[in-house]
Length: 460
Image (cartoon, rainbow, N blue to C red; front, top):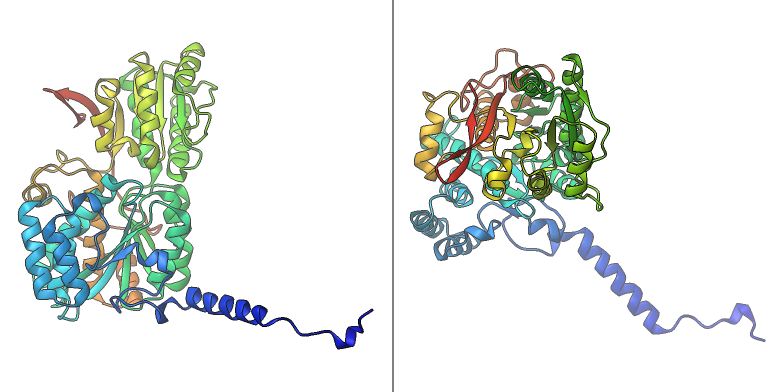
């Protein structure tokens, strides 16, 4: 039997493996020591770094051109003059590309002590919605820089891809707050991402202005949290009133997404308003987020239980399931929807199955035709934009107006919180309530056939 006091030491291979593990850990947890790239990029893990670009990489792959590719390569090398030339060439080929507009402005601004903000959008999971938001940010940036910047300083925009993911939103938010050059964040898109990131922004005192998150929990969240959409109650109540008083439908089945905080809020406010008007909800179970969701069974159950209408409120990344439900409905029940349903995919893929769908939105191009935003948007992008572009423009406009008062994080927050603050928006001035919500009223729109296409038309 061996004497335990005379045990042999571990073999050399153990030390080698241990050292390798320590080195790997150091590589993971001190990424800034091992990676190159733009020093203005926030220090994050390697995987998150692939989700960030000031102009040194293409995030929206569907909008790639040879000129854009050459532009990001030049930007990454620090040759901003060459980057400008190539980004301009790319926009000559494809002007409806907000990522390139932002990169072009960033390249022009790089040597002029710019003020920097970030925008976080779901490029990987919902590229159409991401680009709708980016168009609003790009248009506001472009107009501000064309006027000479913010008190002479041009605006730069760091683009981030959060995929509407809570974990990515939190990791990106951590990177933003740790980069002292970032003065504000436009984002996030889905409420689950905004709610995940908001505590980080609030704790570290960085302004977040979400252009699209409606969840009730964001109202009054903190002094650094703002949004350029109205409170969800003001969006849901007019829809319930229209359904009961104009359409004469008092009994409704609801299909919503239990993993989408904004649509949970919409459902709750819609039901409260419906009940106050004497309407009722039939007891169906219809949840877009469940793996067992079946559109045909959901419609059959609603009809069987006496529903006169169907209200649909999906997560923005599960619009396809809502369209499947509309298709299964086959015109049996009139359709009503949450604001989320206003997407390009709704009318493109829904066609006749979503004909007649009514929903509320915070902005529509017909609401204020005299406002220069719509005209400028058509000239810039070559077509009509939607409410996400408008509210993203408004979010960026608010930040720009605030930075004109003070170009510090704390000064910006104080400017936005001031009761006399206002910024020119896409249809009306942007003003914030003490809760951080925007004051404003929704517009009801309806999907209608116009020629061979289906479009969202503002209701009188």
